[in-house]
Amino acid sequence: MPAKEDLHRFMRTRRSVRRFKADPIPDSVIEDILATATFAPSAHNRQPWRFAVLTELHVKEKLAESMAKNFQQELEADSLPPEEISMRVTRSKDRILSAPLVVILSMDMSDMDAYPDRRRKKAEFVMATQSAANAGMQLLLAAHAEGLGGVWVCSPLFAQETVREVLHLPKSWEPQAMFLLGYPAEHPEARERKNLREIILTVAGEP
Image (tube, rainbow, N blue to C red; front, side, top):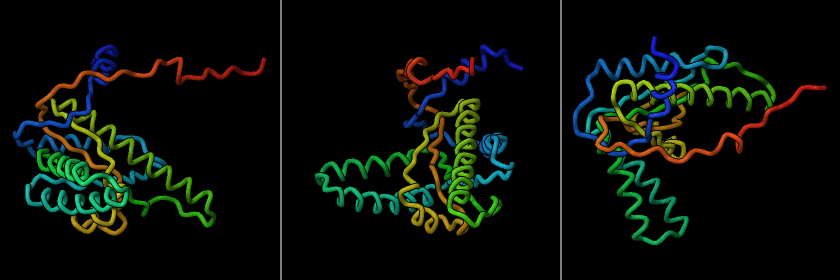
């Protein structure tokens, strides 16, 4: 087992990487990353995460084009200048196409508890979403352990039906995030973190 200092250092050196080498990722590495992701904690241990794995260029092209259409419509509705819309849409497509591996993380409520009231339904939905997010973070750390870079992209949240239809996902799968992964062509510096004193509240007990 690594020393705790090594583990802390490892976790703190993960970066959001958006530029990748063209080298393909071996199937065995992909399988190991996803297997490790499934060891994340989940509510009731229901493991509501689901993964769609994209390595073939034509599949990534189809997804990129379909999501780009959605993105362009939304930017036009926001009344952005045409040149900015074109730049942002092109950049979005290029990022998907340049990643050797794209993983779509979905959440599936099928095995979660069912409640008749809105309050508990909402809580159960949030619990499942948090569980899927746990698996997403573990996936990024597993990729980091394999020497890969990756970035968490939230755009599937804005195009869930499009992603589901293009990739022929089961109806119960709700796309939550997209991970672009590959061997890094860049090594970004760490961004500044908020001081712990800004974000921690030590709650004292009754005297």
